[in-house]
Amino acid sequence: MIGMLALTEVDPKPYVEMVERLGGEPQLICVDFNSVEFEEEIKLIDGLILFGDSLESTALNGTTTNHLGEKLLKYAFSRDIPVLGIGLGIHLLNLVFGGSLSSDINGHHDFDKDGNDISAYHRIYISPGSKLAAIVGSGGFVRVNSRHKFGIRESNKSSHLLASAYSLDDGVIEGLESPDHTWVIGVQFHPERRMELPPHFERLFQSFIERVSG
Image (cartoon, helix red, strand yellow):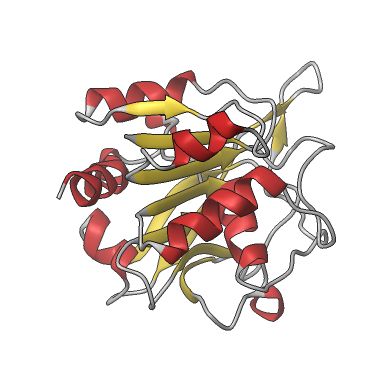
């Protein structure tokens, strides 16, 4: 079972549908982490996806974390369970590993004609030789979507994680991975928004599900 936790008030449907379409068994986690039900539920988790837009006022900052997400991550790390962090998920991943966040991030989201936040787009560089590059098929330059007001700069990055992708505009980190775990990857962009990225980014979910199933 793939445990899925929304870190902010976002629609989980695109994430759930992506996992189901690729043969995974998603389970949204909605219980209180102090409850008996939570303790029983996490024992069934074979993989963990943490997601959320960091456009909301409830987004993580350098001093607070999502305690349920933190507990789930530590559980997954201790058992080498595959983890995929998307959007706000990469932020929590960095925080739990001892890093921090920067609020000095500009141009990584956009607005529609009514003033609502929407995706922006920019080019990133994926480091050849990284796990992320191996999964999506190659390193190098690619255009991705962007939906965040907080971010991770090199000075914010945990020393326990490796950066696998960077924004070309300002060097904000777009991908992180753990060298000490079999499959722990975080991305700043949103591959669940299928029409906004090249189709080969779907391989990120496929690789995660294959690792969970294997």
